[in-house]
Length: 206
Image (cartoon, rainbow, N blue to C red; front, side, top):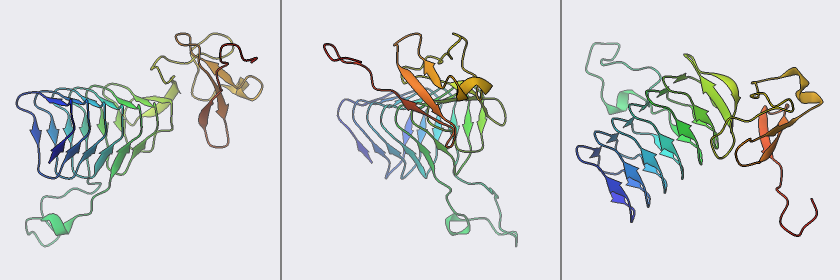
């Protein structure tokens, strides 16, 4: 086990041998981090979160209280012959949480899923497939209901309304705006993802 400088681990948290935790992280009470899990820098893992073998968490990720990240798509306690299943009897299906993403309280991320950069998984959601960068997903199974900025605020469309998952006027008004930090994104339909527009610098024409 390795823990980076400036990281704090609250009491009753369990970090197993072989786990690697980066710098300036906060690991909450009763959290469980399994062997081989890789945690980047400046990650916040809230109370009671369960993170199992095969999970990779990139820098700046938030994992809410009681969230569960699994590692086996076909779990069984026994083999087909009735013997107790052991490590060699199953295959890890890894999970990756990309930079800056957030997993809401009580959410479940099923094995084999990737959550994109700055995506947000709503509280109590059950994620069964990959989540695009900046997507906002909710429900069971989780479905995309909108888009979020790098700062976490829900993006707005050209009419000032919360941007839906696939508004019909994206073709003519592809820009989405953040009402909080003024970032602007463009929806790319071919890959169903957002691309951030460069922000003008002081003294430089837009």
